[in-house]
Length: 202
Image (cartoon, rainbow, N blue to C red; front, side, top):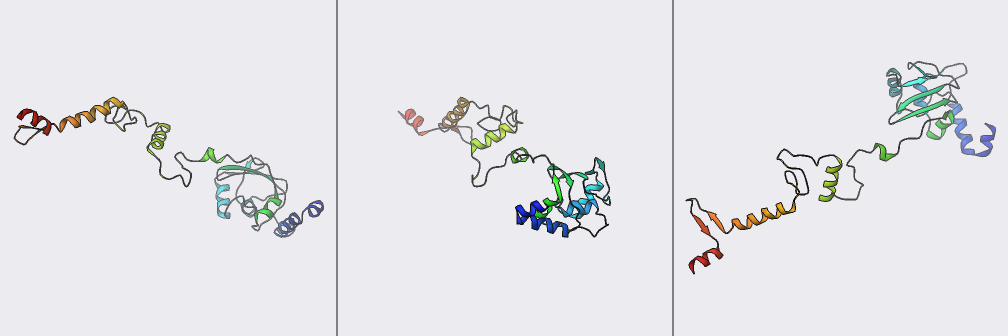
């Protein structure tokens, strides 16, 4: 401890604060109080709930919130999205700041998972704007939405129900154009377009 004080005044101050947060001589510290004090959980009630749910182990054994800790005990708990494994270095019962908290245990926890591993699908970076049609097609393909649709065919570039064939799309355009040349009236008679009418009169 003396070497730590000589090397870094901030560490010395943190150690002193940790010792000041400890219990009076001879008194024990509860596990739910300790994991809250060293900032492994956000609230003491969450620490107690974790113990009751079997998510906190001391030296490999599940413990109740009232379990008394000792220096050298190994504490394992599931905190949010990662597992924490720490060895008790100092006993405290008052919540302290992060620089002081790390002086109270030896952290043997595995590294946290990368953000990409826990990010939900479909999240776009801020500032990229709305997805384009191409982006939406890629998202649908990744989500497996390119299969058969309720209207027949497959969801391709032409949208639901289309076959994805560009010739089919152009054929539809030709039919729409041809429809303007001959339309049926309410009486069932056909009227001709301007081009067809001119040819008939000649």
